[in-house]
Image (cartoon, rainbow over all chains, first blue to last red; front, side, top):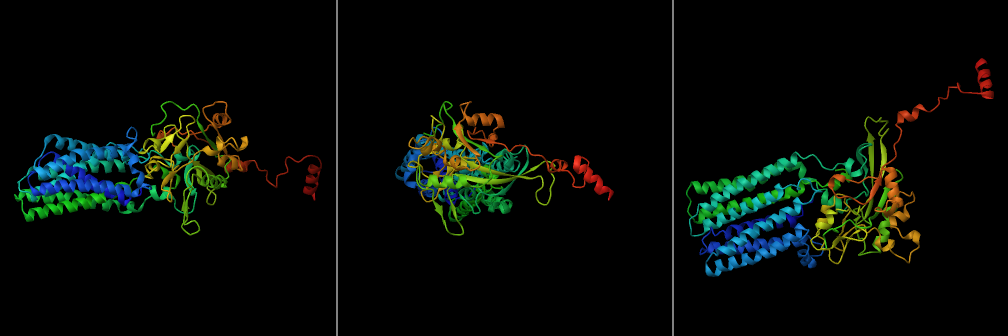
Length: 308
Length: 255
């Protein structure tokens, strides 16, 4: 599948944003700290920015509001509806933290739940497509959820070290959730590698009972929308290396950095905050690589008609 | 409304494509493009139409496959391998995955005749339906930013200003080999249903669970090269000669 930059940016940014908002809803950060107020603003900005970038790949973005109408059958529509509903408790929580320096339990927890539901809908958009076998597994929404939670705790860890309250809970949860997320992703990737293709050139043409089917001629000599959109192959050559880059940057380095901070008993301050910021940036770069691979490595059934 | 019709549609209009007959001339492809660029919805745009990197939205394409039988003899590059031309357009599936994924309600399946259509005024061009279709039946019109697909020439088949003979999809009307047929596949007495029953009409990718309406008639069995060669008489053999030719054969032998 073609890795459209707008979708990669959207799923990465909004994943981080929803994760951070979900963690903030739990009230683990001191609502009086300036850093926590910035965290609320950043969460809303990431979510909003992600949603806006997702409209960039539309052919007719001016009609995007229509995407809220088909929630009964479409996961994409459900995602849109949930994204808008989620804004309500998030804005209330942000308002209370920024202007009143308080954390309200009800809007907080409601925000956490709705954030997770929205991310689940994002994962289900991909998991519901039988035509892309790699994605068509319950592990897909699980990975999306765990990555959002892990990213949320990594970001919250940074704000905890910036803030006035000394916390060990958030960095510990960041380490735990990062390990859980990458374990789930490793399982997902293992699953992908062991897949027996559901559809083959033989089943796609119905000619399998005559013999082995091979594409002789494409319908047109040049590329078309389908081969550009579904036939992306660039990543596969370096997929193994990119997976290692994603794993090390997205998981290993942030885990080691937080572990270092915990073990040295770092208090909040400039240097620990810098280390935590480094963990955030490296994690985000790793996630962009992971998302790129998620699309680039996925094979679509239609390529059985185009010679793989 | 992107929910599929709750009950099976009373009519299932669709195509039956005969892979034994198709000669791969691409006339249906061109005729489809010509009809649909001036018909239902926006024009089917092309990008860089006169340049080296031409591409565009087409609703019907002909692929060509080589099928090599198990243990088939290879002579040169081919031998027993056979070429099958393979026209492909929307199969108007009963469980159309492209319909249910649509977030806007632009994609829908008609409850009266089962035709799957796109309401271009509602389409936002997100492309998710094209991802959901395992057959590649949907192509984005890059100029209009909306998804295009086969309409089963809905603006021909119900058009009463046309002669009866012309009230079929453009691809069917134009096929010089008579490889494409149009009809109602719920009616067991329709020509298309009879063809499907007699020739073992098949679904493409049944494992995807889409239950396509369009059916494909498989190529008829063919003798292997070795079997075909056995029937040919050798030029030197005169065993079966009778009458004048037997006398001539004998005379020439004696000279």
